[in-house]
Image 1: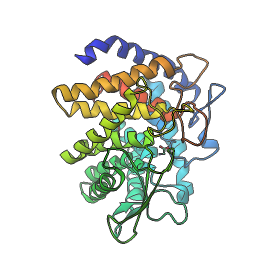
Image 2: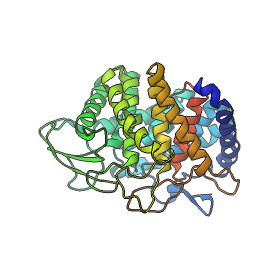
Image 3: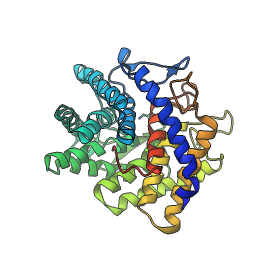
Length: 374
Ligand code: GLY
C-alpha cells in the first residue's frame, strides 16, 4: 500500500540513479571515489588504498549490475576489486572495516558471479577480522592506533555480516560465534537505556562486560548521539537479526530505530549530524539518513501491521526529503547525495561515497530487490 502510493517516485528516482551512474561507471572506472572535487570523483587509490570506504564504489556497481544487468557496471565493479587488492600489500594498515571494503566487492562478486578468486579474497579478510577478536575481553578491537587495544565502535555491527557469510561458506560456526559475541557486546555496552548510542567504548582487556569508559568519537561530545553511529546500529542490528533469526536483535534494532525516527521527524525528515548538538550551527548528515532508511525498510519487512507501516513510512519520508533537498542529478557532478558529514567537528557538508551507496540500496529495496549485499 505505502509502496504503491509512492511507486511513481520510487521508479523515477531509480531511473535518475541509473541514468547518472551508467555514465559515471565508465568515467570513474579506474578510480576508488571518496567524494568529489569540482564535481569530479576523487580517487583514494592514489592516496590511501586501505581507507575504510574503499569498497562502497565497487559495492554500488554490484548493486546496479544486479538490478540492471548492464555490463558496464560489472566491468567497473571488477576493476574496483582489482585495485582494492593493493591494500593486501599494506597488511598493517588493514583494520576492523575489512567487511565494508571487501564484503561489498569480493563478497558480492562471488555471490553474483561465482568468481573463486573473489571467494578467496573475502575468506581471507573474514579470517583477518576474526583474528581481531580478543578472546579474554570478548570483543572485536577497533582501529590499530597505539593504546586502543580495548576500544570497540558501533560501526562494527556492519562488518560482522562478513563473519556470518564466512561461517556459511566454510560450514563451520566459528566465525558466527564471534559475530554473535560482538553483537551481544554492542547491545550491552554501546546501546544506552534511552536507545541512543555510544560511538566508542573502552573495555577491560581481560574481563568481558567491564566498561572502562566511553568516547564521543565522531559526534558532538561525550554522552551525545552521533546520528551515523545511530544508523550503524539501526541497520546493523537488523542485519544481525536477519543472519541469526534471534528476536533479541530485532528488538534492539527497533529501539534504536525508534529514537532515530523520533529525532529525524523533528527536522522535516532531514537528519542532523548529532541528535544532541546545539540548534546552531545547523549540521546535517545525509549518510545517516540513507543508512537508516535501509535498516528501517528491513525492520519493516520483519514486523507486521501498523508497526511495519511505521518503519516503512519513516524510511520513505527520509528518502523523499533527502531526494528533494540534497540530491544532485546534474551531469556536471559525479556524485548524487550531498550534505554528508564525516564528523561533527571536522569537515564541510559534502557528498561521501557511502551516501550514494546506501541511498541507492534503499531505493532498490523499495523497488523490491531481494539481493541483500550484506
Ligand atoms: N565508520 C566510520 C564512520 O562512520 O565515519
